[in-house]
Image 1 (cartoon, rainbow, N blue to C red):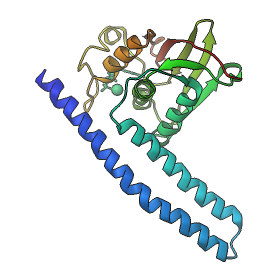
Image 2: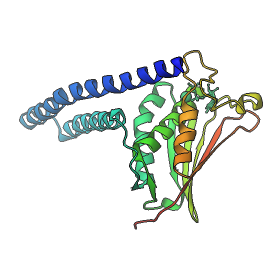
Image 3: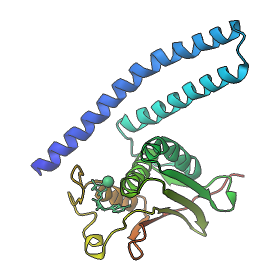
Image 4: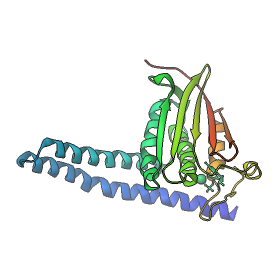
Length: 229
Ligand code: ADP
Ligand code: MG
């Protein structure tokens, strides 16, 4: 329990810290955006370049927005949210980290559903997707792809995460989700446990499998609410 307290403490400290840093980055970013527009308006350079700079600044801004959202004390209020939007946001956020290790996260939406509404605590669910994707990135050798598939199955939505990493051996498979169980030197061994609890709170299921150590598959099902066309 003492260790749990210590770790929970450091997690909320990280949250507070990143919220502070995010705000500090936002302000100068806003003035950079404004001045870049001004500079380009007065220069002979093609508009193509200014559009590029502006869109990159906007991308930083949206990533910071995501970080802020996560750092906020998470409300566990359940609301109808579009799962596809949620997944897109999480994938955008984590693709930055994936690129550092030369991986790519690819989101496949089955039959290009316009939307898939589910009743959920948005930030908690995002936390689950982040935990799973982080594990996938950490297990993936450079140059491999992480696939996220989402589809509707009558009363449920199915989200499948697939990586081409080292997989999870059977003897390890039965231990993951146990508090502090980790095979990583800097791991907390809390990610899967927290994710399992959040999915349980959503009346969903989460399953891990690994085929002959050809990567890992994580399947999550959640009750489906409705679709807006
Ligand atoms: P941590 O990531 O801090 O180790 P987690 O609870 O997230 O804690 O994961 C527990 C363990 O499960 C990991 O240490 C790793 O051994 C295993 N694991 C989870 N996801 C994967 C994956 N995609 N590929 C290989 N092993 C994984
Ligand atoms: Mg983890």
